[in-house]
Length: 144
Image 1 (tube, rainbow, N blue to C red):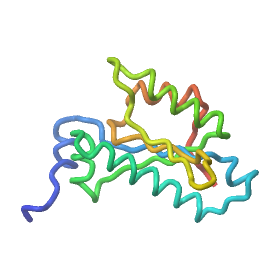
Image 2 (cartoon, rainbow, N blue to C red):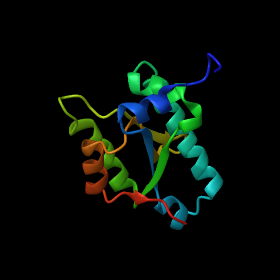
Image 3 (cartoon, rainbow, N blue to C red):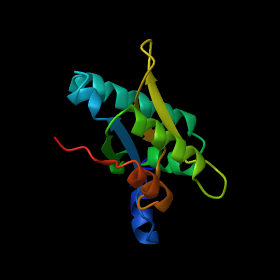
């Protein structure tokens, strides 16, 4: 086995830990009502994901996530509009336990100053705090 071969994917399975996942939440109205194309929206998600990975690069979950490139999991979700996106960011910042915010990055496109999406730092699938915040903001899987 190559010494650079990641071991976290197999270790997670053998230890019974849920896999690490990132959630990326995008405003659906940017496509449907504002006329943004898929390409610009994909760029927004890339910006947010890159930013949160950089900001959380010293967290154990991020280190493990990046060490196992072949087993990365991401869920792309949609939210209705800027109000729901900002509410989600606020919930993630305030509803965490015990007193720590859920690490995330709210991407604000410049120079327009438009909030476009949120990327949540790598976390264990099934995180109840994150699920609760996503549910409160009516986030759902992006399908199209």
